[in-house]
Image 1 (cartoon, rainbow, N blue to C red):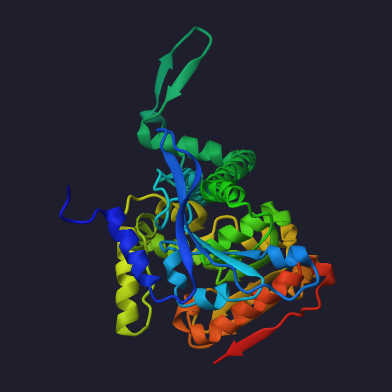
Image 2: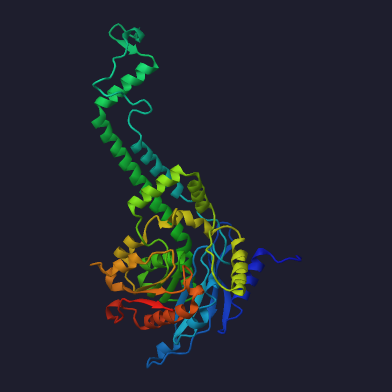
Length: 441
């Protein structure tokens, strides 16, 4: 018997408190999603809301089967973060709302996260870059060829190794000089070989990085697919925030037949890394001890953004986030496997979405968001199919990265609209919805 609640009990109590003000009815369920290596059951924490009122329809099937809408949180958070939006979403006619904690986050099973190969990929890439910058003469660059001195012969020792030939063995200084002159003469050939090796190493680093990203994505998405089957969901409207938006987008690209509409709230990892910015950033990291420390913190910790809300709400959120953060470390270790320092995706969504996104999708950002909606607007200028599938991009005034919580008065009508239109628009070719950029006050 314990006089104090366990960490798991404290997290459950905090979740109950943060959801305590909801008007809609709901139940909490731990859904089995597989078996861990030690034989224990893997579960995903799920909140199942009562279906909204039936939608007016001539079809009996439409009346009896509400459309599933699934909400997925972001990094270092949990389903309770949407406590200011659940009432609005769950009350939409013809909808049944589900909220889920990703595997390894929130109150879902805390299993060890797979060891990342991204650090190995980074090391290969750094080694390749160092060799490019280092000249072929090591630490003893030769003098210009026109003024290069000839090694003094009195310092060269003749050693007879056989009757046919002798080996000249200079002292260290002359040895370095001779080696450098030989390299200088063979510079073209050596540069070619070096470039080939650098290219192979770069390819190896890219492969390692992509492999690491796939392993990390699978950690979340394979249990999520099992969860979908266990819940009896065939197709859904999927809503994801930040890292949850990233994972939702990847899931939609892998399983387009399971998605009726995709709603991404300030998804991380969309843009490509500008090469000049990446090089500048890497130089600053190498030169600055502070930047190196910041990089270490990024790769080893769980940052949280400050939310400018009233004291009572802040207290609820703080207690909730604390209670799930002190649980066994698990999905939090995904950060450095999926993202580079600076929140750039190792495998950016933009190029993947242009190639593989085939479901109606809308985006929502905060006016003061640290995520940039510019890549989304570029989709509308694309000549590819992506233009037909990106339906809307909303900007919420008075909100940042957590716009759904910071300004629910503006956010809730937009999310209700997007869910409602998604019920009828599972086929983008039949959609009459146009690209919009809205500002709500």
